[in-house]
Image (cartoon, rainbow, N blue to C red; front, side):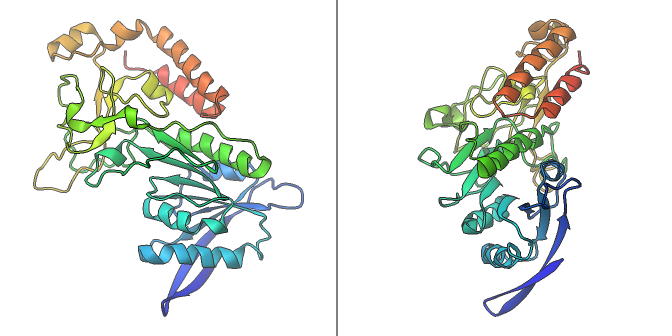
Length: 338
């Protein structure tokens, strides 16, 4: 499907791909998720929960045109598609556009947005470590989230996993497990009025000037950028505040939101870094590395797997992780590098 919108005398064609649930609710799907980027992170879950999913290609529109375009398109589609509830999901500039067009939505899941939707639209906002460490750092909201919103900082996760010109191993931790759980919470909030989990985002006391952080002397750790406020870190160099998924609560590496260029004349490295922990005390003393090795901190893989199950199941009970993702973390733990 496609639509044409006219803004400031210029016409823009917006292509769309509509997917319908295999088992729609009786009477057909009456709820829809609007995405601006095709992704398999949330789409299968939305379809499973009985929502239709419409992916709109707004990438060719100038940033300033995306907000009115979304408002215009949804104004024309809600009726013909017979949708009583419209949810949206977007990242970056598209998230800002959705936030500005929030009156067209019942709920929004936004990643790395610099603005938030006005009431009564309900929203859940997320962002990761790279938001603090990039060239133009995130500017924190000075107040707590409003009643119509929740904020979740995905500690130790970087949006980009591109390896282009990166000096250190790339931080490939996934945001998708958290986003799936938060989408389910948003769905229940907008459909049934079930309040979502409380926000987990850094407060002022959880942040510090970058130059004041006490990094462990880790071999191959890139030099962190300065002149910014960032989340505080623990003795391993991992972030403390926010939503700590199981692979950060029980780490096998130090995960950062910054990296460094391998070739100073090449393109910038957009990813974060992941500096693995040594397997044994002997291994770490060869480097040397002050962080306790995997065997020193966990003892055995059996203990590591059992503890991972406890941490993952706790997040499931708190509605911050879906059961299938909890099981995936435990399965991955069985292959831990020690």
